[in-house]
Amino acid sequence: MNTPDPTPSQSRRSFLRTSSTAAAFALAAPSVLIRPQAFAANSDTLKIGLIGCGGRGTGAAGNALTADDNCVLTAVADAFPEPPKLALQGLKEQYGPRVAVTPESTFVGLNSFEKLIDSGVDVVLLASPPGFRPAHLRYAVEKNKQIFCEKPVATDPVGLRHVLESVRMAKEKKLHLVSGFCWRSDMPRRALYERIHDGAIGDVRAVYGTYLTGPVKPMPAADTRKPGMTDLEWQVKNWMNFSWLSGDGIVEQCIHTVDKLAWCLRDQPPLKCTATGGRMIPNNQGNIYDHMTVVYEYAGGVRGVVAQRQIAGCYNDNSDYILGSKGTAQSGWNAPVIRGEKSWRYDGEKNKDMYVIEHEELFGSIRNSKPYRFDGDWLASSTLLGLMGRLAAYTGGEVTWDQILASNEKLSPDGPLDWNMKVPFMPLPMPGRYKPA
Picture 1 (cartoon, rainbow, N blue to C red):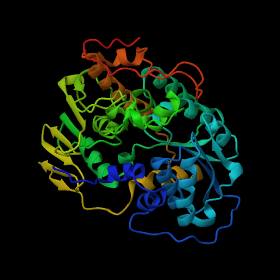
Picture 2: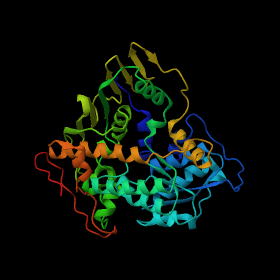
Picture 3: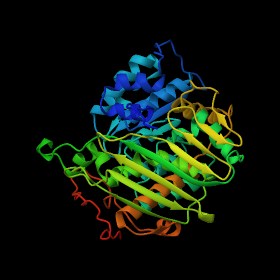
Picture 4: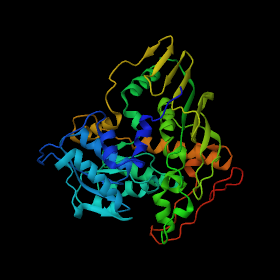
């Protein structure tokens, strides 16, 4: 399926290229402009705090406010001062008094997440660059907050093991944790995978998932770096282009496709994987690949293949092709279909926004009006699946599930982050030469 731009997933990315106002309108309630109405807080009102005020964070806040009429945004936090201003401008225009953020509850800096979590919020939305996610998730769990956690949840195996411990802690505390793997909240895909798991195409033998699209946010030229801008500031402002902050394309953007592969195969871990990848288009000082293909091998000879590319002017496709012993299934941006002994095409609810459903189910879980939702286990395992494929591509070797679980690969800087610290630019990994610690 040749998918024209823009796609719904790319509409999230449009936050990076448009104003927060337009982005909030686009994501929070497609085709519907919500007019501010009178709002009075009460004993059941949930106070929301947003950590990471870029496009994804602004969208998540809008989705949350759309999902539950009795919640209010009371605090925001970001590493830089500009994003909160833009985010709040758009959100206030749309949600009026339900955006109750004051200058005193607007936190800026590398430790702003701690100040926000300590400000008295009930629910935190974790939407900073993924490299910060392990620390942010741990602090939220330690402070007993209910959590919406964007994907991915880590950018290296060391961070992922930190997350696994946070997930264990959150489960013991019976906290509610909803993941930003939005397709798991999509009604058509839920219907598709329910049928596949019920045997509609027999035994799944192979899955091929694609995320072939254009660049998300190209790295600016080095001469655009302002005088005095530190290494850390330069990298955080261009976080998608640095693997320690984004995880690379397969772990940041394409992780949705990796997660659907995991979902299709009931979240069972693969035995091993191999991969190819590299960079065709120069990227200045960035160090991420612009294409990668991973082949995962599962028990019984089942194969899962994920193809990822972020290069302009190429064929686009964001689909999943599933081969079973009794039929096939396909899903892209059109209605999912099954062909075989039990042919089927989704014809159910089409207008329910999966980005809003995530938050509806989080708030419903908190309020006990919907089943308890805890996504921590597969949030971590799908991220690890992406890290496994990336390591295979970077090294050019075969990587087993046990190896990635035990890997000491650590991309993030050592020690507490400080704007003036030295953060060397890690060179682009070369297959056959890359040797993680």
